[in-house]
Length: 422
Image 1 (cartoon, rainbow, N blue to C red):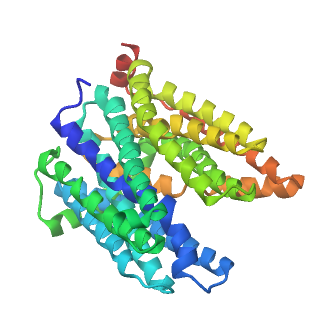
Image 2 (cartoon, helix red, strand yellow):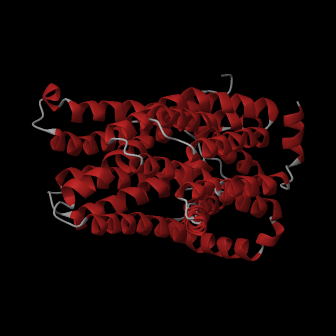
């Protein structure tokens, strides 16, 4: 706790703020409400396609813009300004969902794309500010604090929103639909309110004096082009990014598979919401524990431990038959999901040039958005080749092993090695 000064807490509260969107909107209510309310009367396959297109559009925009925006922010000393811009976009579009009428799936999808872009785009600059708020030896704990608060904050608001839908009369609401619509307003207010400490008390480390916006754009694009040409000189960074892409693809595929797999086994929507809440609240202390583990044994060791747990999750999922096993998966995922994300972010922050943090975190977030590409393809291929859908689950283990092997080849900076040894 010695690392947790006002600047660190203020930075970490942004994770508490925007995780409400990830939990209540992305993972919780939007997919269900989109299908049952905004796409009412539309074929199930059509609504699924629309939702997939909306997610893909937001992801593609972030993939295309992330490194460029990061480079511009680095040159202009504008990480907080860009973060604020994306946060306003995300909160505004989230609140706008309240006003979308039943059957207006196109407008709902457009608002969702804007909100998701605000969420994903803001994370580029939020991650990059880790370099400003924490020294290298502090980053495992500080990064983990952010994820821990994200799990707790997202879980608390989601629990309240779920209660609103189950008991709308307690809150003076007419029905569950009104409760869901009001939950979008609550997420926007929550996100905006708890973002304020970051903008008030987090300083931004500048390698050079900030410049005017147009100058920053010109210099940033030039810097990005130079970085793209010289990526071969950042071999360790590139090696880590490929390793991260492989194992985080497995992580994301497992998370998505758990929901779909639970539905295929006949579990109710309430079972899935319960499992999601379990993951959130287990994730809070587990992320802090992984931060301490990473500080003592090294981020790489913590990542390996998380990958071993995910391999066990895959094996259990292969033979799952009962609801209690599904809840066990939720607990296990909650134990390691925040940890593997937090330690990966901390590990990466030491490999990159400190004066190009936002630009390089743009690449990092770009690789994260490319995740869940290999996993589903491997699952489909294995299931088709074997004739057994359960066999498709096991092949995800390949991603964890391949990512782990590549991570082993990443050479840590000397300062990082000495800290781990200490």
